[in-house]
Length: 115
Length: 113
Image 1: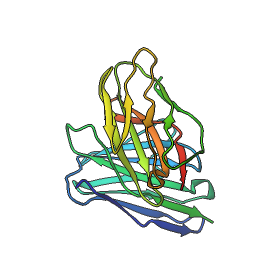
Image 2 (image 1 turned 45 degrees about the vertical axis):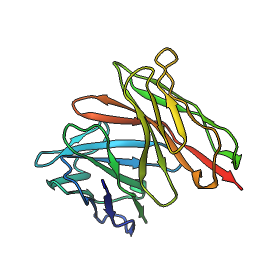
Image 3 (image 1 turned 90 degrees about the vertical axis):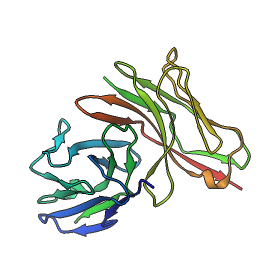
């Protein structure tokens, strides 16, 4: 149990376009979802926390107008990278948890390459 | 602030060797501590956790003890296998408006047969 999927696993896009990444909890209701970014050989950095039906809370330094997060249901959150640029190229990972529980379950990640 | 420092990798061992991956932390309050493992091409999986001082987390032959006096949570395994090859992340959980994880930089472990 506690499986989280992400789609797509790989995406290559041109500079200036927008990319949407989906995160789904397959067998549990995710009241809270998290979005992380991981640069090569570095740790995961939390970008934002989203609760179902509420606006996301962004970490300091993360542009909320550039990284749009929607958590419209208990099983789906989306991250849209708007007007992507090469410096946005990274590995994006989501995680999910149910209310009152501490353990987060992670998706396999989405690798974004902006040309 | 809150931070986690892991020993730098990569770490390469032979099968059946003893493993230690060091992890120390800085935190305000009393965090829970975690080890996550990321196998090639997969997402992070929770390996073990400890929620208070002197607790020992264990799973799949791995162990880690929450040491408040040394602010450490070192990961150990007595006899590693090739299938243990992965990237290991130490993390702490803090409440900052919501429960958040702070990760170390990860340690890549390779086990040779």
